[in-house]
Amino acid sequence: MSENTEQSQEELPPLLTEPEDGVPFVIDTDRGLKRCAEALAVGTGPVAIDAERASGFRYGQRAFLVQLKREGSGLWLVDPEPFDTLAPLQKALGDAEWILHAATQDLPCLAELGMSPHALFDTELAARLAGLPKVGLGAVVENLMGVRLAKEHSAADWSTRPLPKDWLRYAALDVELLIPLREKLTALLAEQRKAEWAAQEFEYARTHRPAVVPRKERWRKTSGVNKLKNPRKLAVLRELWFARESLAEKKDVAPGHILPDSALIAAADALPRTVPQLLSVNGFHGRAAKREAPRWLRAIKTGSSTQDMPEQQRRSGGPPPPRSWKDRNPLAYRQYRTARAWLTHRAEQLEVMPETLLTPAVLKQLCWTPPEQIDLDSVNAALTELGARPWQVEQAAAVVAVALLDPDPMDAV
Image (cartoon, rainbow, N blue to C red; front, side, top):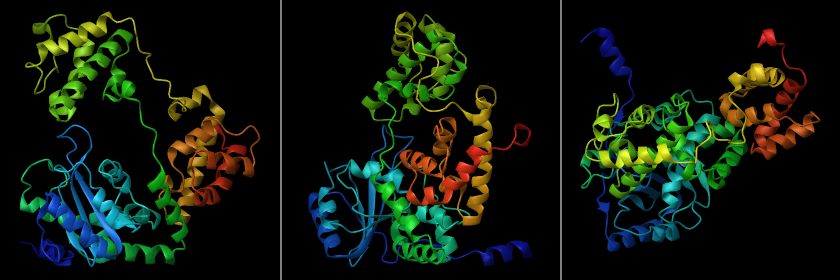
């Protein structure tokens, strides 16, 4: 081993490989769930929570493991599969604050189990507001607490039963340090005078429900859909997508495990008329390509004969991609590019990421459809209506208003 390698290893923070009190048994019985609820009820302070899903393996985004830790209660691992609800845990926690990392990823699957927070602290959001260079849980823990977390099972199939001991250890570590990490981040935000900003972001994350694409339009999210320029081929893709979705839901597997998106695109583009033609399509492959070939051919025939032709692009009501603005709306293009550059500079001054200061979607919408009368008050109102938090309006409105009123010339953007 070289001297440099030895030195770099010596400089690495220690690796945390085991929770302080060991890895608990997984709760999967009514008696165990009652015991867990009783323990959480007598605990004090906030509760650290995490959930593990089987994205890419199972249909949907439900939780297959829930981890909880609270002072005076200990660390608990709960298997949600045997239970219709985890409402007893919700009742036991009362109005305790929840600590999660990247809460918007886990809150929906926890809500499906009857669990929703009355108060929230998101360590990822806090790290973003604090201006930390990396905001993944491992990076934030290493930065602020001087230890490393083992993260080797992040993409595991958490629907596996029984769960391997190493996976359970990894899952337990996800909540092991969240409570002291919250204290570190709280102190850092207070020092930077961003505590109120964080409170607004946490409440928004807790209460905001993002718009959900209707099921009938989700097929448009198929990777590569833009390759299909013919409405007939889009109709075929739509039918193939629904056929795959129905089979995936029935089998409880991720749709991509049945057929990848690329296979749907290839079949919709080729428009085969027989099973042999379908199976000879270049790019048409997957676990169920041959076994379910009649199903796919029926979908192709339905799409080929339908009178219900989809539009080339779904009308979302939002602005088009900014790259097309230069020709379609040169003034909006100049305003957007100017505002984005100035907001980036302002974000650097505040030591936050530009997308944390103002989300790209809000900026695009405002520049594409600005107020008729542009001034600070109208921009304040527009930003608020678009969902910007008060701290964002306070820090960004003046910058955006000036950019709308006096955008840089075309050759400067």
